[in-house]
Figure 1 (cartoon, rainbow, N blue to C red):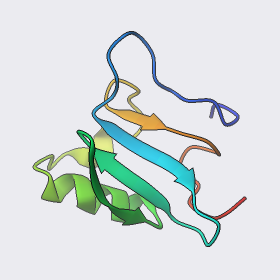
Figure 2: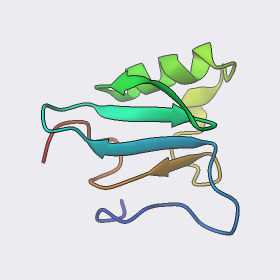
Figure 3: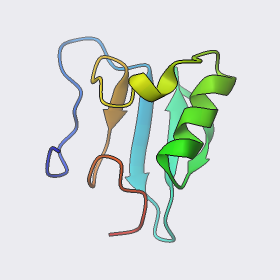
Figure 4: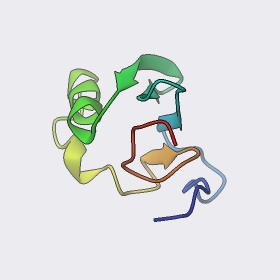
Length: 80
């Protein structure tokens, strides 16, 4: 876990962004710049990615080349 810091590395941005938790919980998810929805769990996030054509999405969640977690803890979806 990264203590709230973005996991993005290198010059190229990750195609999937999990934004900071909302005040009521849940995190907005963007895929290639398009909002995919509001995730309340990893299962929600995986479903958004599956719908976007990434069937093995569960394996990508901890790969900073694919997913950038912004603000808060990685895999945490509640309002802190």
